[in-house]
Image (cartoon, rainbow, N blue to C red):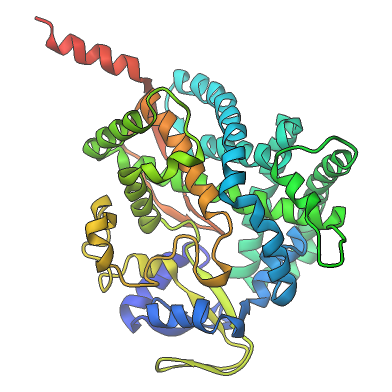
Length: 441
């Protein structure tokens, strides 16, 4: 289970059906489900009866503070309402130029790596997306070395939180051995950097980034967020906003590496919609096939492979009894790969998300960004980010998967490639020249 919970839960789903009881770490009972009716009931219909599990909130809250991801009830509703403005259509259009500038800077580093030889796309895309989110949040003033330190801190702490959750029997040892304190010190260094930026921005002219929206937000009594709350919300947006996109992109490029037909169709769509212009949020609805490709990649490799909730009172979903205090694990990966809801579920087939096939989908069998009132607040930002990076990479480079690799998913907080994904990248102009040479006598 500690090595690969997705594999274990997939096996038990096959053996015991779409809903069963399971003991995480041998000590914590949970109801695991891939049943869309149960999922809909827990995440939407009776969502008020279900909070994020105490374990999740406790672990995340310890390292990320009290913010949107780790709050409930009226506090959560208020914060969601205030932060939602940062992801509306108007603001995403403003952020498009910040994101494009960040992407241009990041691609210079990516290009130099690609010229040397094969590239592990996972850390490279992580750098690109993290810088993009950091610049969207804090503007151009955030230094690259600070971005790198915060990114490393978040990745290290996420791995530690997963161990705390999946192997709870080790938590006493983490405290005694100093592992917990070491990670707390890492968090404190990253917090200090961001808090410095927040306090400095209070004294400067207003900007156009997400940090400005957080600082300008006002509660019903006219008061704004404290620096500490702005810090917590900023850190949680950084955590949620970069790894989702980078991992989705890694799995997407991996899937496309064996589908030259999809690649060519994508390139044609980008050329047709954009020409030589940079992509902005107003362009997003114009990408029909690219949207299908992204949706299919998110189905095969959902970033959030599971979602957990704790029942506040006794409940029943269909024929499933859910006692008060029970943890319900929505096994997103299992639902996405179930042959009950998807034909040939292990194959990469963007056509299953075409408009003609939309009516064939079972509601709540597809949950790449969660569902219900607590669905991901940054889903539109993530889509913009993925499209923006794809529009450049696919038209700038040819890429091929390095042969002989073992590509395997590693379920952390996010579903990551365990051993990375190594690819070779060549300039697209090289492709054009080779095609021309094929036509010569």
